[in-house]
Image 1 (cartoon, rainbow, N blue to C red):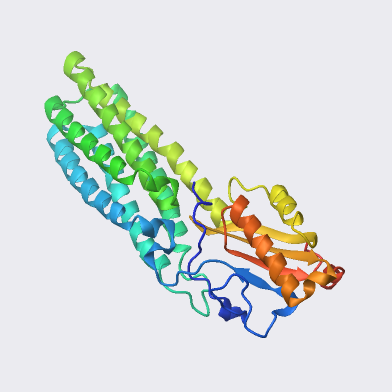
Image 2 (image 1 turned 135 degrees about the vertical axis):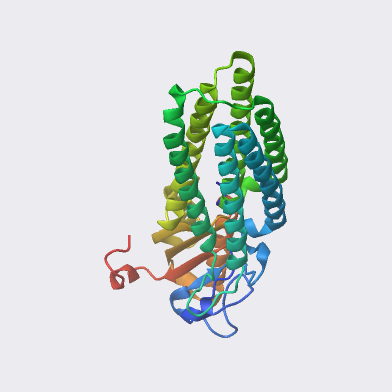
Amino acid sequence: MGLMRDRHAAGHADDAHGQHHDDGRHGHAPGREPAHGAHDSHGHSHGLTGGTATGRHRRKLMIVVAITLVGVLVQLVGAWVSGSLSLLADAGHMLSDAAGVSIALFAAWAAARPATIRRTYGWQRAEVLAALANAVVLATIAVVILIEAIPRVGRAHEIDTPAMLVAAALGGAANLACLLVLHGGHKESLNVRGAYLEVLGDLLGSVAVLVAGAVILFTGYTAADAIASIVIALLILPRAWSLLREVVDVLLEAVPRGVDLHDLRRHLLSVEGVRGVHDLHAWTITSGVPVCSAHVVVDPEFLTPDGAHHVLDRLQDCLGEHFATEHCTFQLEPEGHLGHEPASHD
């Protein structure tokens, strides 16, 4: 899913919580130490479209929308001329792709809006909500196609096969062009990945339509059109489920895939001066923006300004090296401070 590839988060307004905001690595204001060594170290890119993974591929997404809409128009005309349900289903799927990518583009713009005193991460979660909408639309289209296609399997109906084949071939060419545009970006952004998977399914759907057209052309078996429609629906459903599952993980603030909290804790404990780590959390704000927080118990000699700088630097280096994230918040504590914290802290 690419959730751990971007090492810089965008738009986190620490000042809204009364914490010091600093571009340096330690997060300390001159002449002042945060209480208990509270430290926030991460990259800031307020108000930049490139702050999120989707934003960096904005132009690609715009090109995909344009190509897809042309493909939709071609397939709608082909479905009307040929009477093919599978071609209409593929056109509907492509239209959902265009709508989904348009939503992702809006989300990328919204996510680039600066953080505020009320929304300390800005609108970055808008990308995740857009991906949720994509998943729901995909599932709905698949169900509608199945409802329309299943009764047609046992009924013969007239189809203009040459028109069906030409429209399917042009739609497939449009899908292939979109895949080439999106290649690479699908590894970084949840929304780009969603668009990539949708276009890939469209390409396979166009192939199914071409196969159905060939069967009808050479055998006259028109039920192949309805069967191809069912195949397209079955191609859509697993992708909708996969995208929905990933979105739910982000919304529930699950640990990012590929991150083992036990392994993360072990690495943090290996830092000189660290005696314990508790209240450890890792989650994802949006694709490409992983975050981490922890309470770190340190030896008394490391609770001095110089000692705290040393420990925080090493903790930051550890996360950057092993877990590809620089957006983290550490609270340095003396031994025994856990007794002053809520019982829910582990």
